[in-house]
Image (cartoon, rainbow, N blue to C red; front, side, top):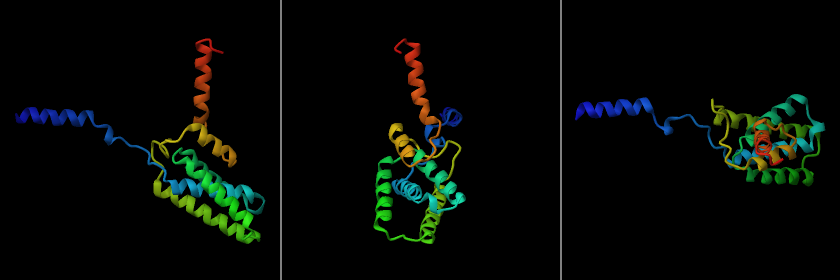
Length: 163
């Protein structure tokens, strides 16, 4: 019995388990909200800031939103940024720059905490069309994998003579 049990354990360890695989973390709704807030606030005040801060926020927000999780919280972030701008509480360029620097710091910290794993960032649990729509609306770069599904559909249509 023991040798059989030993062989079973050895085989199980050699084959492995799907639960042992490395998986990207699910992006938290708070992170998506913050990324959308920062990207929209940046978009509405783009003329007031330096290029380095613009790039830092753009890259971090694109990574978080492009991760494709909890995308429904992006709309709340956009609305909060618009409310803040319309309220007129931030009048000077210095106040806007401070707000955007805080945004950049929080997004960068969020990316560090959640980590960039070998398998990427986010699990893409939201529909690709919604994620792509928010990336375009916020004037963020759209990763190439969001165009792959459209390319695959058009190729299938050509192959099967549907087009």
